[in-house]
Each structure stands twice: as structure tokens, then as C-alpha cells.
Amino acid sequence: MALSTQLVSGLASGLDWRSIIDDLMKIEHRPVDLVEDQKSDYEKKLSEWQSFNSKLLALKSAVGELKDPEDFNLYSADMSTDNSNVSASSLLSATASSSASPGTYTIQISSVATAQKLSSTSFDSLDDALGSSYEGDILINGVAIHIASTDTLASVRDKINAANAGSNPTGVTASIISYGTNDYRLILTSDSTGSDGMGLQNAS
Image (tube, rainbow, N blue to C red; front, side, top):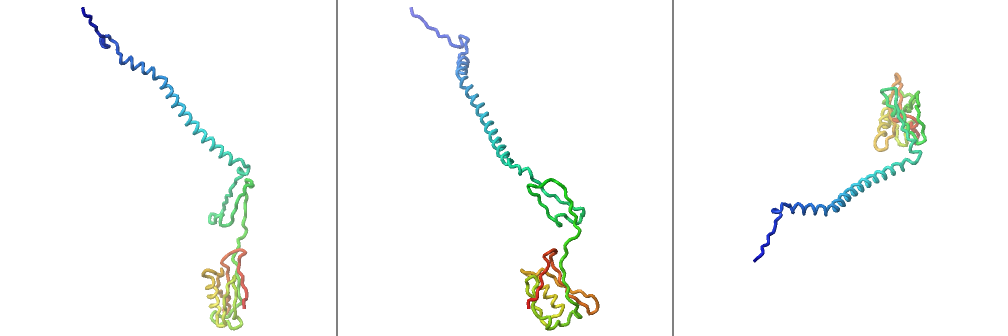
């Protein structure tokens, strides 16, 4: 008599073998997942520590620049004037050194420098020749100007003003002022104020 063998499938037995196998594989893989999670946490912490270290080094560098006590003694000079038409910087300049102390200072300007002026003797006419007694060379701030015997007071003025031009100007302007009848005078005025003034020499 022949024996028959029957196989019971998962469906027939009521067991979900596929799910059981998947769950077993997940359990087997869990240690690997834990290691991956720990690795991710370590990498995140490492990145944060690297960022913190960079900021710490930057702070150390900034503190190093402040180790000199003189670095804290920094002041600036601020100027003002009670005249709205004149700026303080046009009158004077001020700077503060590292050893300066804080304070307020008042400077009163009682007078300002004026341009130097020189006046000639009186001449009867603007247009009469000066004559041989005035012939020769004069130096105005190092620039030579020739005066001819035929020059008039007006032409001398023009020569001086012509010399105050170009690449090497004299820095002196000439003008003529009439003080009355037959009283004309040549006036030389420095273009700069203060101690610069003008240099006038007879070069003949």
C-alpha cells in the first residue's frame, strides 16, 4: 500500500512566514542601525566642536590684540566753533596721541594772520617812464623781473603780475592805488598769509 505525503503551506497553516523572516532580519540588522545612528551623532558633535574651536581661536586672536594697555588709550579730537560761517578745521587742526587724557579745551583766536603788503614811494603819473634810475632787475620770491628805463608804473605792475603765473609763480600780486592827485603807489601783496610773506631783493 502506497503512502502519500502532504505539504502544509504557509497559507494553509495560517502563518505569515514572510513577515516573520522580515522581522528576524530587522532584529539581526538592529546593531548596525545603532552604529549608524551613533556615527551620525558623533559626526554632528564633531562639526559643532570644530565650529566652537574656530570661534575660540578667533576670540583668542582678538584678545591678543588688546594685551597692550596703550590700546585702550585711544582718543580722537573733535572741534567745533560758535561761528556758523567758519568751520573749526579751517582755523586750526588737532590730534590726540595715545597718551592723551580726556578733556575739553577752549581756544580763543584774537586775530588772524594777514597777507604781507609792501608799498612803493609816490609817483606823479601812471604812464610816465620811470627813467634810468629805476632800471635793473628785482627778485620777488626768487623770480627775476627786469625793469627798463622806459617802463611806467603801470607796465611794472603788469610785469610783476605776469611773473605770478606759470609753473613757478612769485606768489605776489601787484596793484596801483591812487592816494590823491599826482600820488600813485605800487602795492605788492603776498598771495599767502602768515609768516610766508614775500622776499624782495635788488638783483642789479
